[in-house]
Amino acid sequence: MDLSCTLIIFGGTGDLAHRKLMPAIYNLLHEKLLPENFAVVAVGRKEKTSEGYREEIYHSIREFSRFKIDEGTWNHLKDKIYYRTLDFLQEEAYISFEAFLRDKADQHHTRGNRVYYMAVAPEYFEGIVDKLHRHCMDRDVTGWQRVVIEKPFGRDLSSAKYLNDKIVQVFQEENTYRIDHYLGKEMLQNIMVLRFANMIFEPLWNNRFIDHIQITSSETMGVENRGDYYERSGAMRDMVQSHMLQLLSLIAMEPPNDLDTESVRNEKVKVLKALKKIEGKAVDQNTVRGQYGACKTGNEEILGYREEVRVNLKSTTETFVALRVFIENFRWAGVPFYIRTGKRMPEKSTEILIQFKTMENILYFKDKQLQPNILVIRIQPMEGIFFQFNAKEPGTRQRIIPVEMDFCQNCRIGINSPEAYERLLYDVMRGDATLFARWDEVEYAWKFIDSILEEWKDHIPVFPNYAAGTWGPKEADELLEKDQRNWINR
Image 1 (tube, rainbow, N blue to C red):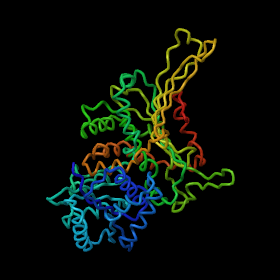
Image 2 (image 1 turned 60 degrees about the horizontal axis):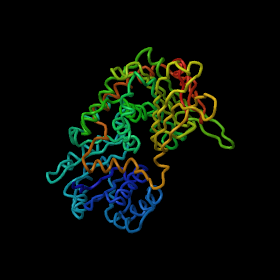
Image 3 (image 1 turned 60 degrees about the vertical axis):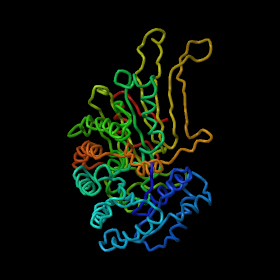
Image 4 (image 1 turned 90 degrees about the horizontal axis):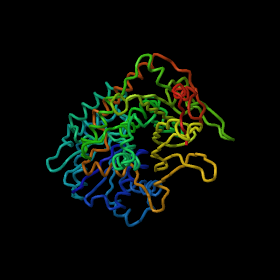
C-alpha cells in the first residue's frame, strides 16, 4: 500500500503538536512505518523559520518520544519537516501557501496526497476548511485529501450538525476523520479480541451473567492552564460525550459480521441508539456532577477549580460527572452501566470493570459470603487485564477466598506499546477509519447528553462539592448505594 503524503498540521506550534504528533511521527519512522515519500508542514501564526522549528521539535521528540532519539533517524526526518507562518483566516495567505505546499511536497514525491490536521481551537475549523476549498486545496485529481478533526466536535447537537455540514460539504464523510485518541490506545483495541476471540467470555457477556459494569476515567491533575477551554466544555462535553461513550459502545456492542470499518462502526452506533434517554426528573436520579475544591496535602496547597487560571470565581462548570446508564436491547436489558470521570482524583486511571452475578447460596456455600467474579480491562496508564475468582484457601479448613490473575501488558520487559497518535496517524495515511468516529456516532452521543445538559441549566449546583484528591462528591457513592452496589477502586 502506498502511504505517500504530506501531513499539514494547523497549530504546529501548539502543545498537541510538540507532545504528541511530532513524537508520533518520529516513532513511526523508527518503526519503519512512515513512507519514504513523506513531508510534514507545521502551520502557525508565530514567525519562525523551518530551521528554528526543527530545533524546537528535536527537543520535543527527545522529551516525549517513547524511543531514545537516534541521530541518524532524526537526520532522516528533519529534512522532511517544514514550517509556514500563516494567518488561518486570511484569504490571500492561502495563495502563497498552496504554492509553498506544491513546492515542498514535490521534492518528496508525495503524489498530491494530503492530510490536513486541525490541531487548533474548534472556532477555526470552519474557516480553515472554507479557505482550503476556495483555493482548491481540498481536491487534486492526482491524489487524495483527508481532514482530521480534534474534539470537541461542537458544543451540542445543533452546533455539531452545523460544523459537520460545513466540513463534509468540502471533504465528504469518507475523507473526514474525527479523532478520539482513546480509541488508539492499545488495550482499547484489545477489547474486541478479548470478547470475540475467547469462548469463556462471549457466552457470558449479557444480562444473564453480568450484574453491572463500571467505566472510570480519573485524573490527578486539575485543569492546569486550560481554564478558558474547560469553562466552555466541562467534564460532560470534554469526556463523556466522546471518550466515555466510545468506551461504553465498544464494551457493549454486538459481534460485527466482519472486521470491516463500517461493520464495526455500525455495531457501535446501535449501542448509542439504544441508550435510554435521561431527561426530566430522571436526570436527578441518574446523574451526579461535581467541582473540586481546595485542599492541603502535606505542605502542598492544591487550588480549587474556581481558583485556577482563567476560571470564573463563581463558575458552575462541572469537573466530575457520574451517570447511571441503561441500554435498551435484548443483551443488556436491566444491566446498569455506571460511568464516572473527574479531575483532581486520587489516581490517574482509565478502566472498565465488569462485575458478574454472584452464585446462589447452595451446596457448601450456604453460610459463606462469596465474592463476585470481577474482570477489569485496564486502559491507562497500566495496560492489562485483571480477573478475580474464588478458590479454596490452602489448609485443612474449608475456606473460600478471592484470588487474582493479573496480566500487565506494559510491565513486561521488551513491550513498549505504541502511543495512541501513532496508530491513528498511521490509519489516516492508510485510509482506515475504523478507530475514528463516524458522524452518526457523534450525533447519537450528543442526543444522549443534550437532554441532561438542558436539565442541568435550570438547576444551579452547590459547588465545590468534593475536595481535590478524593473520589468525587458523596452523591456519586449514593448513586450506587441505592442499588446495593459500590464503586470499586482498585
